[in-house]
Length: 143
Image (cartoon, rainbow, N blue to C red; front, side, top):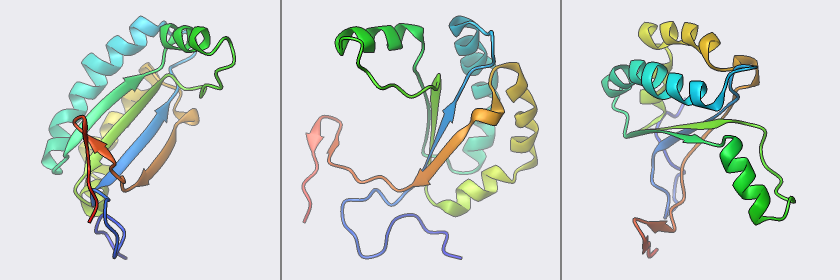
């Protein structure tokens, strides 16, 4: 099994393992409580475990009522939005680091917290490398 990041013989890819997870909040939970729990409890539990496994970056992007309203207004009610409330993004140096994180007993223990803020049955994941065109406001030139 190949655990290196990136696609062989390609240019422009970051050569990382980027994990994107789509999250739906727990039924009946307010946007404020969802964000508060995710930011201040769950994500904070994850940081030390992720750092042990050489994480390059970890971020949360929210798509809550406010954001949906803005987008529907911008697109005159025709926005085809995903039915998720957050995107959790991890960037690891390779698949091996990601696998070590996934199988770390402390990482698995954090899964018990999911019932407090998310609908785990609706969670979706995508994993791969990232092709970069612009970074930090600058165009990336390819050889």
